[in-house]
Length: 100
Image (cartoon, rainbow, N blue to C red; front, side):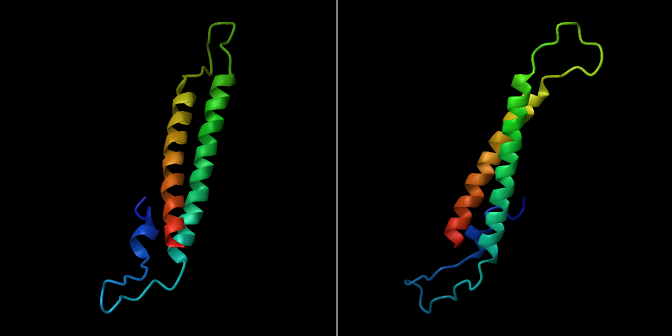
């Protein structure tokens, strides 16, 4: 994502050591976008968790697999989704808190 952590980049607070002080950011648009992206990332984390649980809940078929066999990638995709989702939740949540 090209705008990840946009509150870290696009918001400015007062800088007392700089004279004259630069203007502060007047809107909460960037932190609001970070909040939205954090919620969407939380959804990705949830989907990853669901894929892991779904993959681990399936038992091996009692007969040899002929059609529509599971490849075992659901669990790996779920773990990847959880990892990426957790990292993005941490990034966007931190960025939103700093921005607000």
